[in-house]
Length: 311
Image 1 (cartoon, rainbow, N blue to C red):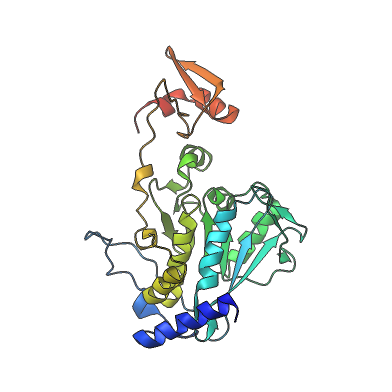
Image 2 (image 1 turned 90 degrees about the horizontal axis):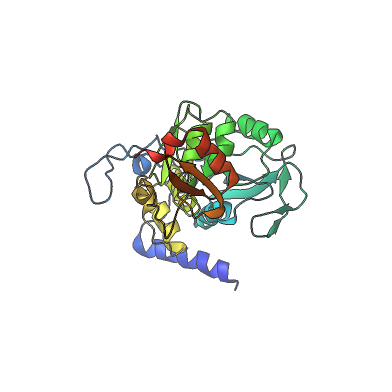
């Protein structure tokens, strides 16, 4: 017996024993996924929850992962594993595929090669769209996301995939988050979007954005919860042996609300708070500042007061 088949049967058996079978596909999980009365872990602050999503009457939910060269692996593989492990006795709850401008191999960050399942021209309509951080986003990708989002239930970005999502215009006037190292860049490039620092993920209707890297796992679990309820999301996390609680509290990235303190011994970039390359140096009011890149040094020199005043 294959390992995955064994795991699937074990999960089904565990559900039978506990008497808490997952909702079959087609049954609304509104009563379980509604979050109006939910509170944040360890407190009484209500968590803002969009309306639950209704799964199809039959079949699985199509999930498209939009990729190009430089796609960050955990940004799409983390959510991929969540949706892959969301299953019941009735079968898989989600149908997963990658989509790119062409079906030529895509070189991800770190060198892994991925052959896209579909091109933008041949991809079936998705109900969930996942946009990871990547380098090769172009007009063809933006146009496909815009068109596909019109009929999707959720369009979500992970990490600096928020920049791609923002360029589509779908985030205009809404709230969003991204990797903490990109906060300043994001605010500068998209002043019409309300950046939420310290958010694990942000939901704005059926548009959503996750913070850096592993935050995409939590947002994906939240999507499972919206479709199939809290218990199904918990079983999915348990199958993954995932103990993270960020999907239960979208404001759980508070550690990133404050910038790292720069010292002479260990300077950090005043724009993104990341480690610096000492070749990028600028002086403002008699003090030397170092940067992670030429781009951030240029950004600083255009408005140094913006990055030296306390936030």
